Length: 297
Image (cartoon, rainbow, N blue to C red; front, top):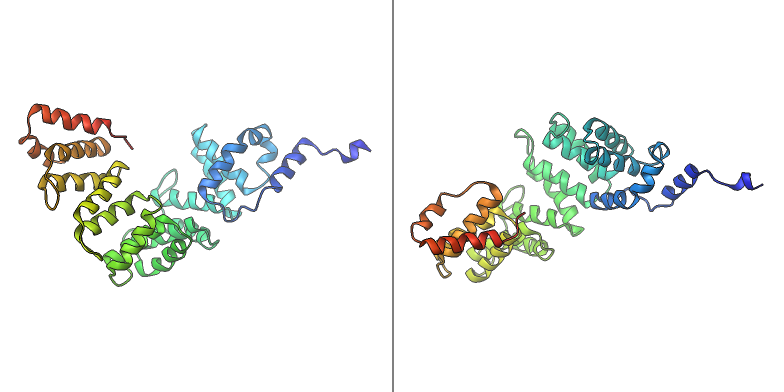
């Protein structure tokens, strides 16, 4: 009787996975968290686990990359999971084909997998598909077609999509140019601490685009983005402080941001040399110390 009701270890493991919540709309971050928290159990039952569900295949794909540096095996696991409808694997394949990482670069294949994730209503997938359409591959961009997908993701509160949609309205790309709408969307994303949205909101505030110009407030937002590691923001803040346009001129802090940008990007802007000509050796040392104290990203 006991032998009839006892489940094998493999069956128990399969039952454990089956009891997990539905994963069709799981994000990549959630998938990674699942893999990290279940990896010990997955490894203990690898032969059985590999046959259980697409999420498990995704985990073994990530493990093949991180531990074994085996891209071929990793891509096979990811493809199995993606073909079974697992959105994080679909996004992974889309990014791989978009960047040509571990596979031949293929824009059409990237679009296919991004679209598969987007069709599940996953904001991450909708934004990825919209992004691929907006910027295109080999010149085949379609900004107007991207806008509804950005909108779907933005309506779910996705900060990346809000930022992309804001940029579309700022530039008038795929939609009529609309500074107030761009400002509104940047504010939504900035409230979630999206660093590029914070930077763009700062630029619009500084320049008075869609709102009354407020140079100190705009600069403060750009400095926040610069501190978060946005190289473009670091260079912009440096240039503003060097010119002193609308804010106090400050060569030492300006040079420190040029040095920070150089540490981040590996390229030193020639404008830094011109500032150094105006500073004493002690001031130059002070600027470099400020740069070195900032967190690297």
